[in-house]
Image 1 (cartoon, rainbow, N blue to C red):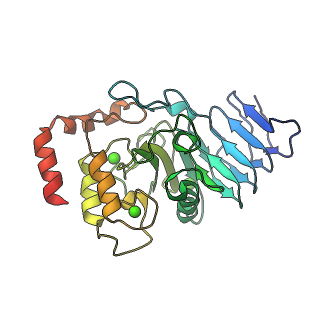
Image 2: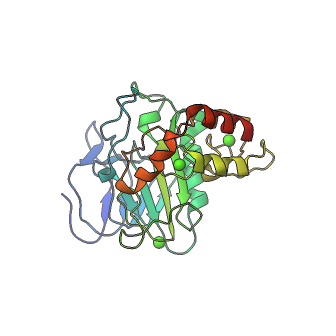
Image 3: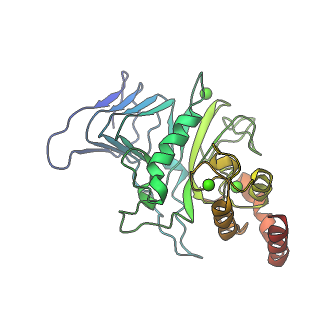
Length: 285
Ligand SMILES: [Ca+2]
Ligand SMILES: [Ca+2]
Ligand SMILES: [Ca+2]
């Protein structure tokens, strides 16, 4: 366990592994800075301070179990406990942040980092392999991972807790936590979730369908976001996204991670007759 004030800086490491793993729950305060080598934080980076990753360095949250996908029994649902919460993310050059199958909240003040985070994800996604040489990746979907899960089924969704989502998340008193994370209204959340879960609540259901339908313009406009319906990070909401959405649309899929009590109401949508759902899906798209 690392504790104390002043932050944590990983400079140059010696040895072949070139990797430091923090497996305990760390309580240090101040920024986390990875200047070289790999910093692995098993339980997530939770100090609500700046995270900086220099070019060539890597910060990673190791995959949490379960991380396999063998429906209908095994889902890569991970655990809420490995979430990260930081105040900013800065990645330089070939620096990499690997979120595995965990979530991260960037609880910022001042200007929103939404576009920076989007750009990091675009770079990490790297056209589909999640093996970008810089930016935000997920080893769970990385083409170089022997146990890679399908990036056409899972992705890292992102959205801002600014009232644009169906649920306003908070600190758990008046408004619910975001998958275990206390957030305010100036927070960008990233979530390992189903492709198609544009409102990043863990489900791909009618709420997502409604927003997708509204935003779908067959690629007429650029600069679109995941939470609008751009699931392949190319900035367009076009037939490729429609195809991904249709393939993944299924309100009966379990939430990633497993649903919290507050989400149980949404599951009832899955009780709609499947034929009716498909019909609505086809007619409205
Ligand atoms: Ca904030
Ligand atoms: Ca959703
Ligand atoms: Ca797209």
